[in-house]
Length: 490
Image (cartoon, rainbow, N blue to C red):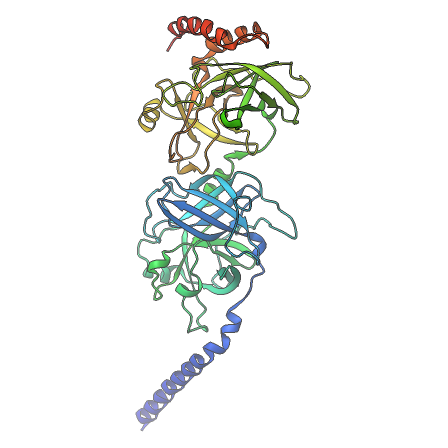
């Protein structure tokens, strides 16, 4: 008798549970309106456009600083180029080049070029911008980092775009054990989330469907959605690359860029008139009161002038190229010396010393990018053999620089004539890149090989009057430099 009652009680409990679940299922759709709301986090978010290997993506990322964006995508790093645009509800996916801010460099977490399975490595990418974002209380703002492990009971949302408008969609953290069961070999810096169980008709493949969408818990940034949207498995939880474990990589990458004014007054804009009345602009370095060093220039231009950092315009009409060629060619050393018509104001500019030593990999070096925006990027001098192998068409005396950290690539073309400064002295001048550059190495003319030539060029230009025929000087110098080259110590 007791067993019969126990059996009846058990059946009743099962029926109650089934009915309760049926009620919950019926209530799912009614709860959808609570699942998402118009975002309150748009001020922390940017649109990110990236292209690599004939593939392109438009997703989102978060603002780490006025110079840095963090996103996630599944593109390879070879030749990757990215740009960013602050989020706006008025954005319609159509932008001009002026609207987008180009990424100066792109860094990948883990220094991996290939796209590995998404649970084995966070597909995070950090973009250092060519120019600063405009930050303000009513506009874009930097986002705060989570500084401790997530609590499974935290109130979390994922801002996700739908037709270019952001919605904050609720989510919840999955326990580590369940996450690892779903993804054997799960990376330590990846966690799992899922749609809250009460929203039983929703799966993350349709609602958390944008890589780079941030996970925000209790108002703090915790990670980014990282997954293959084309192969999403709705039976498994969504993957999040967390920022807590990758914070050292993020900070090291951000420190590569600096916009302070050191060396700024030693740089100058060089402009000259080329064929078809085309104005050419290249950066240059002040090496004497009236002498500027840059890449190759047009020596017989009818109009040449420089602009100092305060915008003062000073004419020049005397110049000498090392190879006497323009446009510059990769199989020749691209270097030019310019004599100005008047002395630069010593109160406004500062000449830079030229290094007599060959730069080495351990030197502290920066690429001082003058245009279109002043910014310094930490770089390392590359191994000579790697430089030769990567750029076989270039003159054998060229050297190369690369971003200081592994897994970082240039996202823009660096203008020829850009100075490379090592230990406070001018160590090199960048050359013109030919064709499609993969963004890893940049060739430069090393100054330690050119000291004698630069000194001889200065003497010749100081002896030249504005009305002197420049071609005669070039003929005389070509004979002199031929003898000087024999004396250069390699």
